[in-house]
Length: 243
Ligand code: SF4
Ligand code: F3S
Ligand code: FES
Image (cartoon, rainbow, N blue to C red; front, top):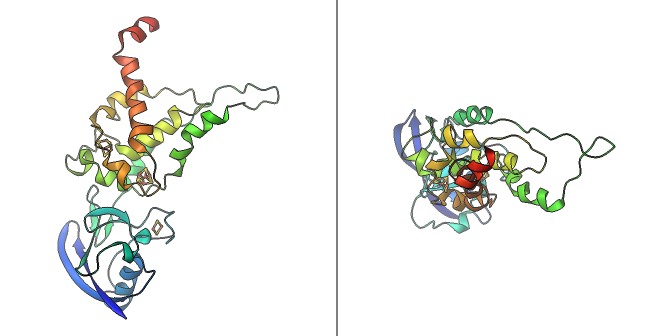
């Protein structure tokens, strides 16, 4: 049986250090399996958040060899095992213990986004008619599992800590799902510009690269939202027509 070494961040509230654990590994294991094995055999007090082990709950987000990833979806045969595999907590949120961060800021952000506001029903039976292609446009945004890996990698939050001015890619996706919904009549353009900080995204596309659901965050959600804001506030023609 082969072994591999995992260099895991241990500590509390931002203070701590890496600790090496060598454990047996076998074909088909994912990083979360190795972490659980270490927890069971060598470090019973190690804190790690997980739930589904199937890439659907978004709980096991961490940084593996410096890349934001889901531990339960990172197979050991996709990473080099000839040197220690580093496993660290996400960096964009307050550290709690070991691999666990406090992601509650994200839930507070979500509360600030005006909810779905459907237009009046347009069919005699009191329901709506919508074109399939209009539904398709927002469907990919609904795949989000709220793992917050995109929030973790975005430099505006991770390096510049502008959490009070920028809602981050996850919540721009959420806002885009509402704004582009064929039934929604809500208007979030002013909020996007002033409170949600859509202009702070400089289209680095790092968020799109780490999304485990392969949502085309930048091109399909953020850029159209930016265009909406530009059309509304900076385009002289649309300004004229609104007068
Ligand atoms: Fe995770 Fe993708 Fe949702 Fe961001 S958009 S929270 S990376 S699933
Ligand atoms: Fe950040 Fe994604 Fe924009 S990583 S800068 S939100 S393209
Ligand atoms: Fe649910 Fe990894 S444990 S996404």
